[in-house]
Image (cartoon, rainbow, N blue to C red; front, top):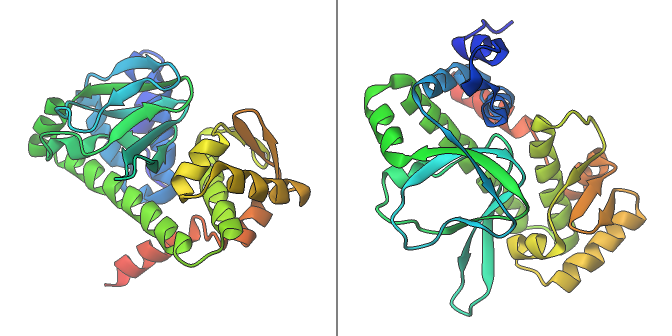
Length: 264
């Protein structure tokens, strides 16, 4: 059994308002799922003054080219990072769910390299990037947290790119929904059935497909009983079948990478 850390103690201690914030608990669940050996690196957040922020749908957190000043943790809702292609179309490079840490790369880039927007009414706890820089230089645990968070993001993205490059549009959509369902389940009390609050347009902009084509593929998934579509959300009914259709390995891929690293 994993030893209790200061993070565990503070999460349970009602006299610590900072750790009552949902974003911190979600981040802990994310680390425990993917990299449990680095969970105690979140103890470094005790030294950070994170401010709660609320965003309406389509509010920007930052814009491409602006001075990069913010980092934080998603508390609720869904955020997306995106860029515009030369033909003017939007490409969403990632979706940020509760517990995801964002903006740490702003420690190294003077200006933002993409846009970040709330895709639905959302909230996050955030701080100025200068606080991250100070902690990165002074706190070993914070630099560990940064490295672990970047490793998780990189592996999630790498697995998605590999899937998108070899699967049909139907299988790619199944993979993406299975991935989002797996990530959403970390902060959800639901075990099998829960909602992913993203629109057809968002899925289309991630996959590089038209909204019409995504809608057709969703109709097929719905006819098979895998999902149920609604306005601005997709309800996952059969996550196991989605994973099979999308060849999604889920947490197993992270276990495999950890085992490989342990013997190298």
